[in-house]
Image (cartoon, one colour):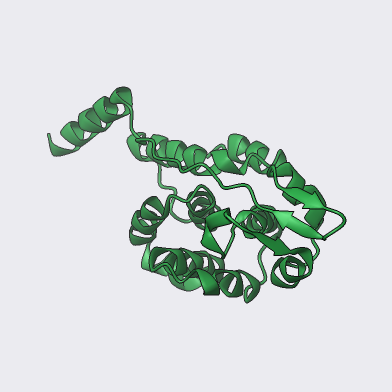
Length: 190
C-alpha cells in the first residue's frame, strides 16, 4: 500500500488532510480487495478525524478496527480515548488523555498540533494565560504552533487569543465513489 500522500501530509503539517487521505486509501484498498488491516495506520487515521473535529467518523472507524489491532496497538486505544472524551463532551479531560500516553514519532506532530489547537474553554472563544497552556501541552515549539493556527500572542499581558476553528461538515462520499462501491458489492454478491 502506498502511503506517500499520507507521509507527505504529515511531513508538511497538513493535518487537516490526513483523515480524507486515509479514508480515500482505505476505500481504494477495499475496492481493490487488498488486505490492509495489519499495516493500516489506525492511530493516525483516528487522530486525523479527531483533528478536524469529525468525532462521528472517528467513532465509526473505531468500530471497524479489528479487535486484534485494538489489543495489540495501545496507541490506537489511546487515540480513541481522546475521541471518547470528545464524544461525551468531557473537554476537561482531553488534555489529560493526550498527556498520559507517549506518542510514536509518527503521531507526535499531529497530536501536538491538535493539543495546541484544542481549547478546553468554550471552543476557542476566550483567551488563556500562556503559562497555563504550557502546563497543559508542554513547550513543544509552542509559539510557532499557535501562530501557525492563526492565534495571536500579546507580549505585554502574555495572553493568547485563540482563533475558533471552522466546523467541517462535508459529506465524505462523492457519486463516483458510491458507484464504485455499489459495483464492488454487486460483484461480491454475484
